[in-house]
Length: 278
Length: 317
Image 1 (cartoon, rainbow over the protein chains, first blue to last red):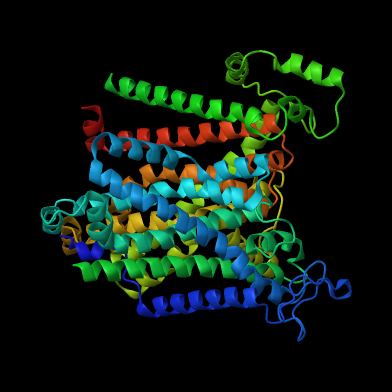
Image 2 (image 1 turned 60 degrees about the vertical axis):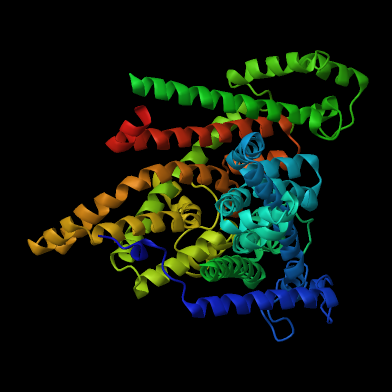
């Protein structure tokens, strides 16, 4: 006999969650630093000091044209993270109201919303944004805008099923009896109960957008050449892998850890908030 | 008989999906910035005569739907026109490149099964133990990260530091190709390893506590036999369906991996074509990759029907 417990994914160890939170704070700190500046110099080219492995002056060495890799990795934090964060916020801002309306109205509205989202979900999203971003020449932000719509369906499905589960609970009926209008019931009464789902979706959408946009930059179709986007840096420093491997290892490690931290925090928050709800 | 009906339905669905995709890719010619004539001539300035001859050749003076019909008629015969960049037949380019990509995808599936299934069995047999937690944390990390970043780490460790494998190119001759494709295929495989590990783990965790394993142990069946005959065989069923999903991911994920390891496959063809706005190549590659993905899904469902009589009964009833 299997007890449900054994087939669930392994429990996350709390040490990993703490590490993930610490790393997320680090990335957030780097974003602040890259905005404030703090004597960062990610763009100055020193051709005489090009292609150097780590030295006391340049802790992660220099790239092809002698730019300081550490300064570029720090500066790249905001460049790399803000796009995906905006995409995740945009996707959730579209998905949640749609999910509430689809669950509330049911029938034709629900069918139209869900079939459209199924169709979008079936598209290979990386192919779609490669073709659109490449051929239309809109670059990074056009790709981000298209990505919002490609990412909406996954969150929409989950949010809708949670909203449907709330529909026949006693508090909904109580709200109806005291004469709350439908929009008020949806957004003041139902919405707070979707919070765990929204938080988890936000972080998972962020990871999906981070992977898509950084891949696009890596392929040379996202951020412009010379940008400090970690995907662009990795691609441009690939030919330095023998002389100064840190120039492409550092952005790679940052991307892996950022994506992993966001996933871990998302799972953890979801379990916690779900648990509290009972 | 019912199998034929099911298959027929699925094939019709694939044809319809391909029609929609082909319509969208055809429309790109008119949606892209710039006039269709100029797009088809390329970046160089053109004389009025050249524009007229392009219009004549591609039938640009005809109504939109008639043009689509002509284009589709040619596309059905695998004729996507010629590349704007170098004048080569798009179809011969596609054939030349798909061999590379398909072998990469197949190799990645082999590596995926070799890596993921044993890990899933170990994790599931001692669910909740240390090995389980480590495997779960590592595979979660690999699945959430972008494939080019984990691929770069593989490339650095096994290609640059240890020098076991070459770091770019395709090679020639079977063993040389396998040698060249190992790191790219491993990159694809570890990008989806969590999916297969989780599945194998869930099934193994159920089987390990089942009565027949208990009785097997009680009668003194060797542990090795329990692992291979009981756990491995029991876990293999759900894997069959995931293979379609995985193959679909490989065929699109290869775009990034081919770029990282400089492999001349369909993915790098598509990226080059997109960057140089070589529309006929983009159209051909998009349709071919979509077709492969749809075919992979069909194969997965069909093999699921073939191995599992319960599913066969449910679907065909």
